Image (cartoon, rainbow over all chains, first blue to last red; front, side):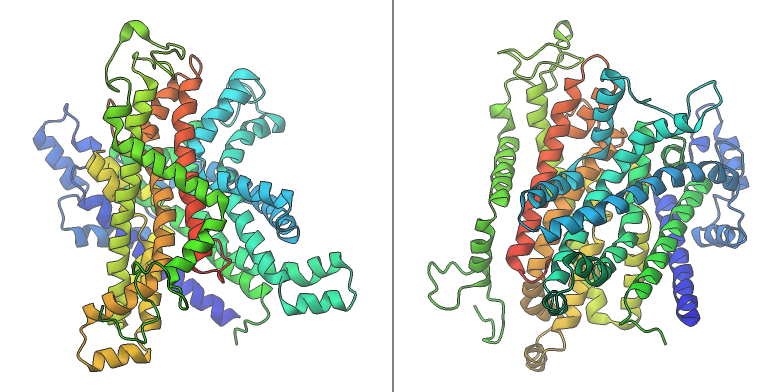
Length: 315
Length: 303
C-alpha cells in the first residue's frame, strides 16, 4: 500500500511539472505582454527596463528554469498588478473557493448517489424518467444563466436571498448570514456535478443489479433492502468514485463563472483578473493551486477505489 | 470497395435491404429510432441549424439595426419577442445568434476531433517515448481546469470568432485522443492488420482502413457530446466578455448584455438562455442515444 501510494504521489508530482510547463509556454508564447508594460503612460524605455527587471527578456527556457526553481520552494513571486506575493493573494482566496466548491461537491454526492440508486432500482418508472430528464437538463444548463435566473427569482422578485458577496456589508456576519450567501452559488455550482454523478450512479447501479450474484442473493431470500445496501451499493460505487477525478476540474472551471455571477471573492475572480492583465506570476500560481487540488482529488479517488474494490490488490 | 473480407466494419454502404447481415449503421439507426426523446432532439437540431443557415431570409429585421426610440418594447406583431436596450429586434438577434453559437460548436468540435485523432494515432502507432510524452500531455490537459486555460488564451489573443473556435477546440481534444489511441493499440496486434502490413500496407493505410472505422462510433459519440461542451464554453466565454464581441449577436453575449438589465427587463435574459440550453440539451440527448444505439453493451455515461 505504501509503495503504491508513493508511486502515485511520484506520478502526480511529474504531472504537476508537465502542467506547469504547458501553461507557462502557452501563457508566454501568446502575443502581447503583461498589462503593466502596455500602459500608455509608461514610455517605451521604462517599459523595456521593467521587462528586463522582471526577467521577461530572457529566453523562455531560462525564464521557466528561474520560475520553477523558486516555485518548488514555495516562492511564486510577486503579482505585477498588486505588488503583493502571489502566495498571499492565493492564500486569501483559496478558502473561499474551497468552501464553495466543497459544499457543491458534498451536496451533489449526498443527493446524486441515492437518487441514482432509486432511479436504477425503479428503472423505467415515472421517477426514473423524471430523474433522467432532470439530469439531462442539469448537464446542459449554462450555469451563468441559471445563476442569473436564480437572482431574478430569489433576489429580485422574492427578495429571499442576497445576490452577491459572501457576507453582508458593514456588519459582523452571523453563521446564518454566511449560509444565506452560500445557498445560491452552491446550488448553481452543484448542478453539473450533481446531474453527472446521478447519471453515473444510475448506470453503474443498473449494471450491478443485473448481475448473477445479486440474483443469487435475492434467491436466497435476503431482504431486498439488504441486497441493495449490503451487496449492490458497494460495487456500484466503484465507478462513481473514479468520476470524482473528472468532476473536480469541471467544478473549478465552474467556480470561475459562478464566482463572477455572485461576486464571490474566490480564486475564480482572481483568475479572470490575472488573465485580463496577463499577470504571469498570479496566473502560474492559480494554475498550480488548481492543478494540485485536482491531483489530490485524483489521489483520493484512487485510494477510495482501492478501498472499495477488494479485487484490486496492491502487493 | 477493397476492404478485406475479415474487416468487421463495412462502411455505411447504401444497401436498401440487406436480408441477413444487416450493416452496423442500419442496426444502429433501428435502435436509435426507438428513442423518441432523441428523435425529438434531432428534429430540433435540424430545425435550428436550418434556421441559422437561412437566417437572412427568416429574420424579420436587421439584427444590428439600432432604433433608440423603441427600446425595451414588449412583444408585438412587429417585434414578436420585443426589442432590447438599443431597440434591436430580439427575435432577429436570436436567429442570427444561432449562426455564431452553432458554428462555433461544430467548428470547435472539428478542431478537437482532428487534433485528438492526430495525437491519439501518433501515440498509438509510435509507442515508446512518443506515446509517453503525448499521453502525459493529455493527462496534464485533463488536470488543468480547461475553462481557465481557454480564458487565458482568449484574453491574450483577443476574442475573434476564429480564436474562440480554436481555443474551445484546443481544450476539448483529450477524450478523442484517448479513444483513438486505445483503438490503435487494440487493432494493430490483430491478425488481419498483421496480414495487411505483411502485404506492405503503410501506417497511414492501417490508420484509415482499419483503425478509423473501428473507432468511428466512439468518436461520433464523443464529437456529439463535444459540440454540447463547445456551445456551453463559447457562451460562458461570451458571458465573461471574452467571446465574439457585440454588435455581432451570439446567444452568449446577448445574455451578458441582459444581465446588466435584469432589474429592468428580465425577459431579455430568458430567450438566449433557453436557446443555449435547448441546443446543448439536444446534442447531449442525441449523443447519449447514439452511444446506446452504436454500442448497446456499454451502459456507461460519458464524460
